[in-house]
Image: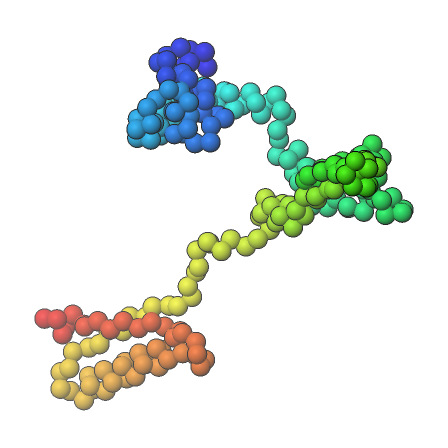
Length: 219
């Protein structure tokens, strides 16, 4: 990684360092000191630089290793949101328990906590009489949906649809004026028409028939 970093120019070094934390490639280019026009036009090219990629991947990998970010750990945290029981945060009297009395991992369900001061009286007689806490729980439905997507529980609507229609090719012989050939031609055409009929009302045909001329007729 060090060699790759040394090979980069001044602004590209700054770009590579800014890229992991930037919201976009263009933002990283702006932070690196590029003009707005240059950043918008060339940010993707900067990001594709092999040495930039080496530095970027090293920095991201270091953060992941330091934070111990793993799929298993993320799924475990997601499970706390999806399956946590909000009732565990309340006492028998229905009052919210102090945080130090919450069950282990119960805090993962909390998305927001607001501490609200309570007052009594008005004007000069107004005085603080206590505090109350307002909590907002994480979206359980969103957590469940995310978990189901991660385990591929939903059918993929984008998967290729396999069609079951078969294609039949009917070779129509040349009309020679002979009764036998004419009869054969009529029989084949009748068969083609039957194949094109749906097996059940409202269904597509079992066969999609294509008619072609015989070699004899083409001569």
